[in-house]
Length: 295
Image (cartoon, rainbow, N blue to C red; front, side, top):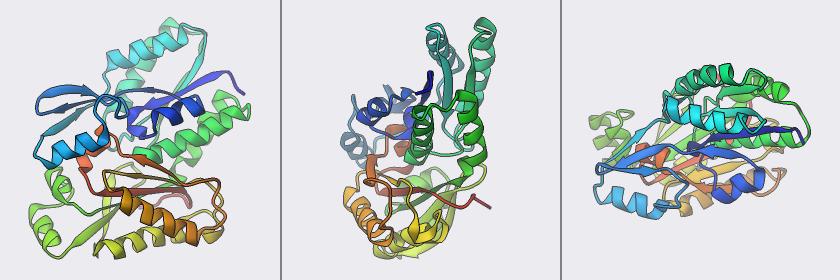
């Protein structure tokens, strides 16, 4: 195993147990609910069920990125113990946290010139961002050095696919990703938008699909179209969801039927407060490795 630390932020939407299992450190985002500040601590202080129940009942949420000072303190604590660090951030297309991390990197590198510190823009979100970090943990555990792991990630991160659908347009309308008019019509016609993350790390609507049954199929169709090796795909698959585990399990079942060579068990994770504050309840996301993303 290589002797560097690997870390990310809570928006990678992995569980506390999984972070410990893979020896991945994380730094928490903050969010507000009805004006009260909370830590996005993977649901320990506010479980996802409670978060989305409150949002369903009208609670207003707002996220805030990790500050330069928080990053500086975090990086300094790790480097001061004699460890090198590779930190992976939430997509710069969704948050300014990558820029904050880069400023903190410059500050801390002056204090610890003998240490190596790399900051990587994942261009991903939720458990797709998590699946990238998981791959880097595999490489670290194989004994690959920090520079090579970082370089591999820069060259291959756009091969990580994110496909989302939602059965509740409320928060997509509120966030401006769906217009009020389109949202009203979509809700009336039972339309579930299918979205993905593009080459710049933005969340982009791709298709308007009528009915939940059809959008689940279209989501898996995207994996058939783009997965590395097609139906012979033998990599890992992660799925995240916001209070709709039954829908996530339907996606999981269909993926297992279509892709019999998947590595290990498909892991399901709850969407956390940082991402969930923007999606609201009713979102399912499928993540896998495949052809390089294109616009």
